[in-house]
Length: 75
Image (cartoon, rainbow, N blue to C red; front, side, top):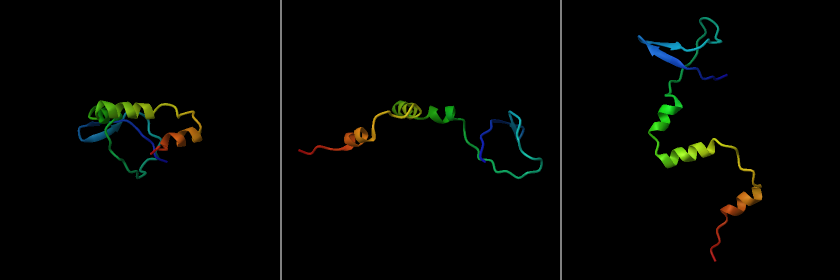
């Protein structure tokens, strides 16, 4: 099962910042990604606002209301 851990890179070695629940000598795959805070810094403010909005609660409106919002009146 995938999990995310925080590490620090020191002297050419990745060191976990917490205890790992991994068997000794078990092969694993590591995907390196910058923390979310660093990734978001280069994003324009309007896009950041959309991202923050999407992290919030889901809309409570009915599916019918949501569908009617997408209809275009061409008259």
